[in-house]
Image (cartoon, rainbow, N blue to C red):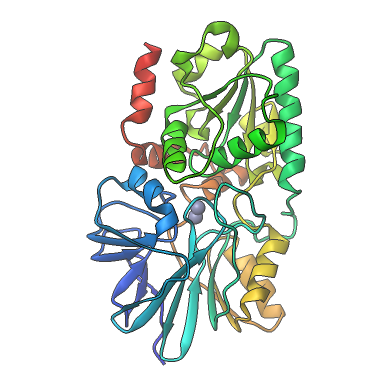
Length: 369
Ligand SMILES: [Zn+2]
Ligand SMILES: [Zn+2]
């Protein structure tokens, strides 16, 4: 029997449908799970994605030939039935379901099980073969509820604001930042300890979220806020901005990183930051297992992260498990794994992300003047 999806040089290839899913090289037709740079790359001729992510994807890829589908809407692509289902990872993130010859495959992209209002909630989709991410596929990764982490984050910000010290929070510019903004506003309402200042890379994604109908609290560019307010501000910036001159204006700020990797003792120390908040847009270990169980799939293929560990575990449980070699995991939170595993300083992450951001971050650099 032909495989519905195989890993090719350019990406995950669906032979009967004649398309790729999240190709890492330019192709004729690309189905995209979500807008993070390791899954959505420029240069392909035609793109198909979930409607919810249309604005975000355009903010990332520019004016590409993009078709979108509503959640659950089915189309036929060369005899393959294709539909998109929420992955709960970032705005518009989809699991892609493919059906052909009586067999259903689901390609998960990245996914998160805990729901919040910054994107549609993860929905389990039944299938025969589940192609899953495995970024945090080790039993040590177990997330606490978002609300607890946000309360902790608010306390940290308040304490800093009381002594007129800015709070610089490094977080992924697409998804994590907007999730935090929405959650902070919901938790504290009007009682936020100060203004929120966003790096240009974060603000361009805020704009795409707002344009997509996600309500976020007001945010400011650093140049628009007077000095006294800067010292009480929460500053959201992507991790790659950690050594940038843009940060100097905040003086001796307290800094922190919001990431699943903060669960590992030593990551914070290696990065020389003051605080770590364990907040991830990926499934934790129980989440991965719950998601896999819910598909009912007898066969599972892991793509990126601790794929070998997951494959071993699933085989012990009697599942047909294997892995695809992919190039995912270098742009989103997965990219921080390099640092978590002590393999370097994440410069690859930095340039990949920077390359994806249009001129907006440059604008902000100029205001700084
Ligand atoms: Zn992602
Ligand atoms: Zn990814």
